[in-house]
Length: 385
Image (cartoon, rainbow, N blue to C red; front, side, top):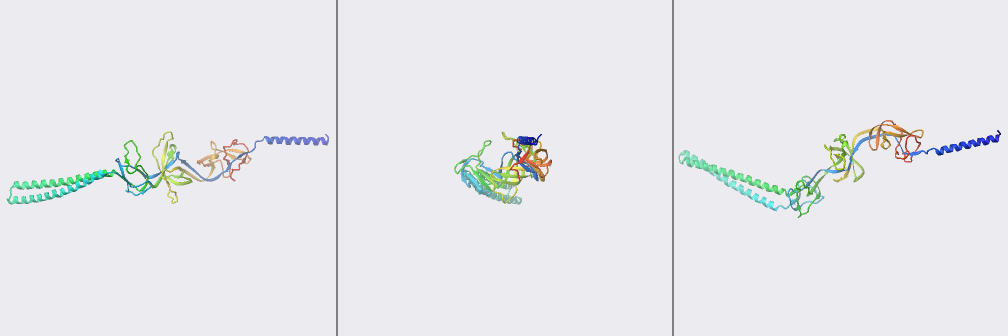
């Protein structure tokens, strides 16, 4: 074969080889962009959170109503007022009861005067009986006169005792009228803030009859002591106990959390219609001068910390597939599936007991189409540097 022919054959073979390589390259799948996270060491917590929004509650809160109905005569406070323990809040019209009390007081005074009179007469009669007894012994008076004097003294002394009993009776009647008056007034049982008042001066206040709830006349709150009540899923009840650490957040204070403790776990399960059964917990905030002022009724979320591990190998929980599997960035540019043995976990991180070491890179963009073991990959721009 002549040299020109050989050269043309080599050129043709070279072009065919380049064409084949080009076709192979075009048919190869392009590397998939994935978000990778580098495995590190840090803290992992196991925690549980409330199923529905919790509420800020006051340690002391009472809804007051008079025990009898009547027309409101005095409203000594208004909504928002700070009151002291024992301060008058509201008074119903009770002039009739005051009149009864005044009458009972005069009866007490009259009864006391009768005691003075009866007992003085009894004392004189006893002296006379003593004098008659002495005269009888000397023979100056008859025995009948002596007996009559002694009987008179005994009768007068009995009258004294009866008068004293009348005083006790009239005092009891006076106390009864005062008790009735107390049923028409409301005093603050503790220092606090008047949250709400139902009724105005001149309106008729009606007490709540059995089985028929009516709005209280005055809602009094002690907001110097607050706690958070939150419903937790019943399946988590065995994991919770008083004294556990919690983190509390409030809708009114976004992007802030406050440490606290579990104060109480309810000893029963609450069943709410059309909702899951829950167990209420009460959590208190740790004392902190920088804590913002909280309002009773704020909605709150409570996260109960069950366990903590520090400086452990951890993987983002978003990188885990079912069965504790992860996709690992292989050195050959392909994704590799790796089985893990895990420990504590929360929504952010999961403790890795076996399967990964610090520095490994795992895929966290599992929701992207086509992400699976064996494909080639490139790091997405969102991958942390």
